[in-house]
Length: 223
Length: 223
DNA sequence: GTACGGGACAAACCTAGGTATAGCTTCTCC
DNA sequence: GGAGAAGCTATACCTAGGTTTGTCCCGTAC
Image 1 (cartoon, each protein chain N blue to C red):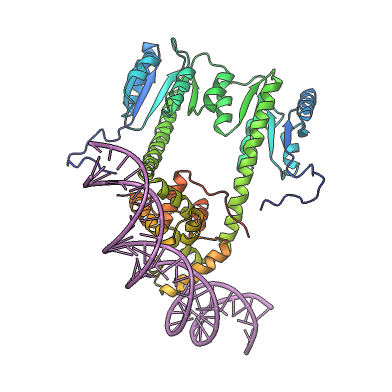
Image 2 (image 1 turned 90 degrees about the vertical axis):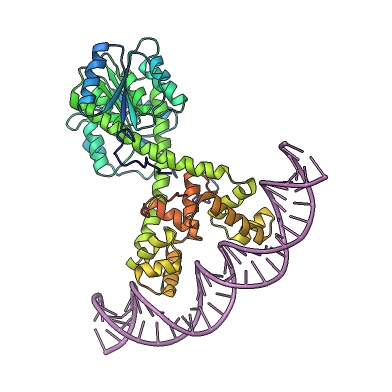
């Protein structure tokens, strides 16, 4: 998992974050680019939403800095499109003539910040910092969950049945009864599940099933 | 846990939600009160932040509707005070003369919505509905977690040690080795833990320890 | 048609988990 | 100074979990 590059010279693109800028005002793009590069961030700037969408999604922590008012597709539209496309890169909005409903909509949709022009350098740098940090966490979590999910998908349907009952706390014999199987069969599936899921203990398996959203009926806790 | 009143006639205050209004404009208070009552919500209205704070915190799902501009303590200040006092009732702001930074601050601090005057009835009703729903969920989660936490606090320090190692997936003998104990001792503690925590299975116990934030070193998942 | 994977089971065997009973020390509270 | 709780262990015993080897049925893909 945590294999870093083994070579001695430090590699400078392993998880070097990128800031994407979308603003139709070239001078603004230049100013922001200079600002971000001055603190050592990689930058890619675009003049419109479609240009951004054509760029390949990056494989490093990143964030978007969007002008609300863009030609064609507005910043808010772009936010919605990205969400629909299941792209959850954190977004910072910049606006010259924003209003409150716009702000509320953007923030409710998960924007990190919403800054008004003229933007103070420190404000946007702070926002970008926070956005990248959030993206890093999101990516970490995502990687973990998708590993678990792909293992889960390698299970046969019977194995999935057993997994859900076992992680809900039933004993092998109870699982067997519910599925109409012999206890030994459950034991064998259980072993296969542990192997396929890469779980080293039942505790592991329970946590994985939590991550996958496989829940029993209700959250226990009775006297 | 889930002891409801046992009497036959349906009790109408068991979890009847309440909307708290804080606005210095009496006519606004009246209008909002009428609006909310017209859809069957209980309402308590106040003219200033201190008045609200003197009222007893309710034991039902609720939400706050705050004017941003209040005499003395502003709506945003009140939001911060409540957060500091660990009161997390969802807040809906209403403003006549708000600006974007204010909106951003409120939303970042967790406000449900931020509406501008004149407020459309449907907008505020939707917001209140969403706020109460969120509060219901928050309260449910809270109740569960605090039950688990109080049980955890009834454990002796050794039992806690064992709990954290067991739920991290170690076998009894490994736990024993790490704590310098005999395996039998671990077994006995383990039994006491299950009893005190009210866990019916190891899976239960693992989920409880997750809820308590007792994590092992790292999130496993290796090949 | 046979090779393959999923599904199901049995016998044999071993390890891990869990309880009951009993006994020991140490510390604290009244 | 004795009662009680926490902490620790031993013997004995039983149940649950888990692997291996081998067998059988079924469907389907080549």
